Amino acid sequence: MTALGLARLQFAVTTIYHFLFVPLTIGLALLIAILETMYVHRGRDPGLRRLIDFFGRLFLINFAIGVVTGILQEFQFGMNWANYSRFVGDVFGAPLAVEALLAFFLESTFLGVWIFGWDRLSPRLHLLSIWLVAGASSLSAFWILTANAFMQEPVGYVLRNGHAEMANFFALLGNPQLWVEFPHVELGALATGGFFMAGVSAYFLRRELDVESFEQSFRLGLVVALVSSVLVAVVGHDQAQHLVTAQPMKIAASEALWHTSPDHAPWTVFALIDPTTQTNRAVVQIPDLLSILAYNHPTGRVTGIDELQQADVARYGPGNYVPPVVLTFWSFRLMVLAGTLMIVLAAVGTWWVLHQRHRAHPQFLRMMTWAIGLPYVANIMGWVMTEVGRQPWVVYGLERTAQGVSPSVSTTEVWITLLFFGGLYGAMGLAAVYLMRKYIRLGLEGREPSVEEPVPAPGWGVDLS
Image 1 (cartoon, rainbow, N blue to C red):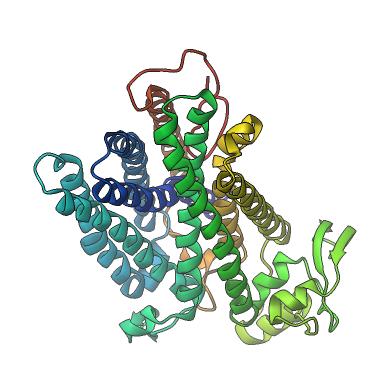
Image 2 (image 1 turned 90 degrees about the vertical axis):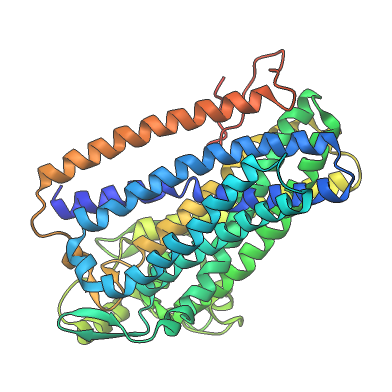
């Protein structure tokens, strides 16, 4: 393991870990805002108030861990990626600064107002505070994705004195990559919040505890989960079509497409991939589907890895421009599989809720509790495909990942910080699981279920009893 390899591993671990908490913060904030809107406009039902307090506690635990992991993640720009920071800091730093000074400031300020304002503010003003928290959470994601979109598709810059300088701030905001990436992430976050609320509620419905209250949160969670899961697939399709022209190598790698496809390109469901010989075995394909995904038409060629590699060598000079094909291929399929299961479960659950049959299916309620983990799988695999599929570029077409690493950081130093961050994140993860499990088991009335059984945890959905 070189310093470069360890630096990449550390950034991958910390980013994935941080992103376990971000989608739930965005999605659950909006759902709590909807619950409080119902509370204000339904005569301040005490059951709804207890429900808001219950999910509010879970939100705050998740929010606190997410903030700490996000701060530690940003340390690495100065520690392990100094060359990258020097090269792109004049562009990359602006949206990050706006996110910290505007979006996060609004989010944290009005979250404090919401926590301590129940008995000090009017109901409508208190309701406004949680809607501002929800809006600021999404605004924070927007600015982070503005920075990431520049790495995927650089716009609005000039190269001067060996580094990128911002030439047009509004070009960053109009980046085509941003406007296919942000809706995808935002809807994925809403799906995460929907499945979390529905899964936790299903746990109590199956135990027949506080049924009247958790019926409301179960219905709300399911509806949001269904709508957002379907829309994620729609905007994800748009994002994939954008990549066909913006990052064709990523699309080719995600399909393990070594050579340019025929006019009617099939989509590969399964394949055993050998990158050394550039061959695929045991291939299972759906005819014409790749052409449809790429062009909304059964006819259309998709350029293969070999041809794209030759074109990149001619454009950028000698080098290997092929990303890790196996990881890109399978991360994309795991994302699709998790997303498909989400749509199916949410659709079945919504149908049964509309026909008052969901409580007659305890196995379905158990399944919904475990399904809390599905959006996390989809979110993380989507980011793995996005970031790994961009390699070897840290800024696409401008700076390679190997050029962005800090030149003076040794392998030993990266090992030390990797182990330190790993230990710290592990401790925070245990604390998050313990607190989530504790406050879920306490329920609305502050009492535990009489029978010990699995309790859902955010993102993992495993037996923690």
